[in-house]
Length: 212
Image (cartoon, rainbow, N blue to C red; front, top):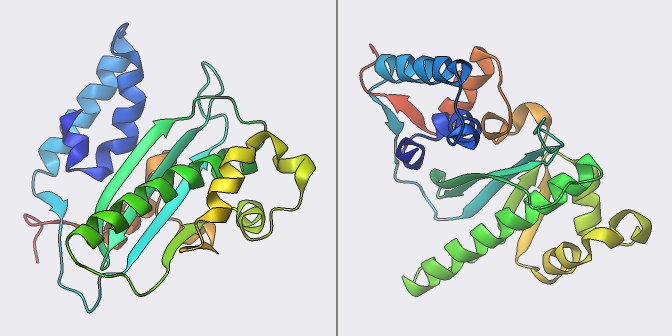
């Protein structure tokens, strides 16, 4: 599990496996063996930090609605960037069952905003001023619309706290992103090897042992 702190490519599979730590089966051990094989073939993988022209803060958020087959709870996931470099990421199951994909992604948006604000406050303590708005990308058009104009009371009255929190944080600019550009997919679900490697490249994860 400690590998997930330095290897975001393992975050999803480890978040799933860790749910069965107290009662593992042979099937779970087979999955762990596959993870170990992947690690053995990618020992040189890691995050490459590059010097950029700015230190703007950005984030990508997503959620898999009712993804858990045990209790049908959704899982919120996000990536945060500073100056184009991946800084933090998280995958966490939500506390309650979401009644729609919009609700699940809206709750996930709140978690990501909390992380972005923490990074912004930390940078202020380091005397690094942020002149541009923090950008948060989400692939749910409905969730973005509610964040911009929360007037659909029947659809959002059960997430009032999250709605007011996002509305008050005016330094956050919520933007819609196409699903194929959603980097948080690798934290949300199992994707094809092509999509997986493409996302890793965009996240700045490279393999120093790979032939040039």
